[in-house]
Length: 75
Image (spheres, rainbow, N blue to C red):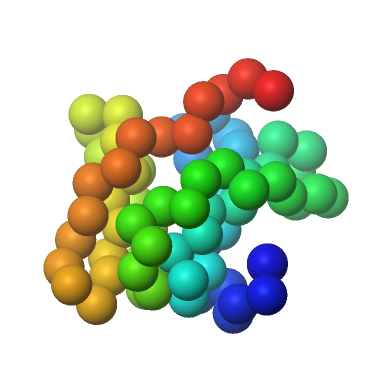
């Protein structure tokens, strides 16, 4: 990514998720050795991420909290 990373977490299934100031979501399935773009998220700067009990991500943005689907666990 060309933007600053602003938040990150370990998902319940062990994958690592990072979020950028442009709202991009990056996912690692190999313990952080490499990351791939998972989605462009909300398109807004993300300041915090959390996994919800409903199997979604809560993204804290400058326009409030946004709920987005979890990235797929395969590929």
